[in-house]
Image 1: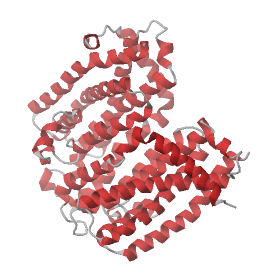
Image 2 (image 1 turned 90 degrees about the vertical axis):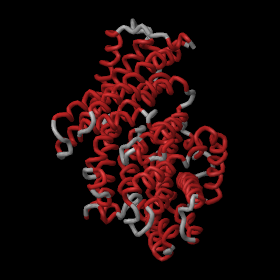
Image 3 (image 1 turned 60 degrees about the vertical axis):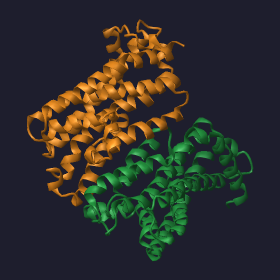
Image 4 (image 1 turned 180 degrees about the vertical axis):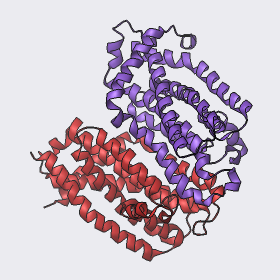
Length: 262
Length: 254
């Protein structure tokens, strides 16, 4: 157990090589692979924001319902980007394509591979979140230049989910077990993290539980930057995300490493 | 000519395999729709109140979610399942060597995946009934609607699974068809709230008619509205099943 928590010795240049490999691949195939996951939050924005928004008066949230859910959906877009990378794609490369078996015969060590995948997942989150934010800005749903601060928030959100996904992927045996990850970890966060209604509306025990949800901190962070709010609270959310990533990082890298070498 | 006895043998085989793998994923099928009903029905429902049809919002959403869960299971399981059986394991190439014709295979696959998906919907509706979200005894007729709906989506899934070369087509079916139908198909709000063109498109989807019918039976107690939608679904099946048969036939008979 202690060795799983030991700080991994990663060669940064080697990790970047793996990230670069992924970038090269996705530059060719982004339409079929990157676009579908990106469209999902956009569908929620138009469907729920427009169709359900007519019932939600502006006095309740101080803004239109569409503008209220928009920054939260940007955070969800960042989550999606990292999650699909560290679950399905990592499992595919690990087990079906056996790509990692080939890579670790080169000068890249298993921990370099894991770090490179994390970097790529965070990058993908940044792309998803920023693209979503650009759409919001075009539609006039941002309030001033503080929205630009959300751009560094996206990879921060993505990193936590990349780590969580990598830990889960390193522990499961068959691909079907992913359904539990999505039903019990991702979807509850998507629905109850404050995207569609403030977590203060939840019953008290659930509201405390929401504090443990990474997406909740991501949603609040993005909403503060896009719609305005308390900068101290935003700093707290950013710190929470950074601290949890710091704690999970050695575990995720060492677990995936163990999967590659045994 | 389709032989029901031959098709039933393939269904029995599918059911036996399913029982073996049930423990892996089958236990949690109701979790996702229940999360949607809680998150939207109760969470967003605090804003919506009883503005839609005078119903508590959670009562409005629950029957729509039963229909939507049939769509999700019916479409995706059949599309991925058929693709795997035709391309990876090539199970159906083996089956067609037995006294089963391609048409029997297509009918069996649509029948099996559709019935299985409808069972999920029925179980989910029963759970919502226990939670007090069902308002009319006509709900007892809803399983018939859910079965029709399951077959409609299984026919789409089998057709796509048979036509597909790789996993990109069923993946697109998920992100490009199933998800939009879930969000725009009348589960969360009346389709009249959509722009006119979008509304008329949504009215052409089986999910819309399934949602209307299940809600009419389980909540509004309006069997006439449900019957109209049921007839629409039967009409859809009359077109979709032959299309599914055609694609399976094309794939199995060179």
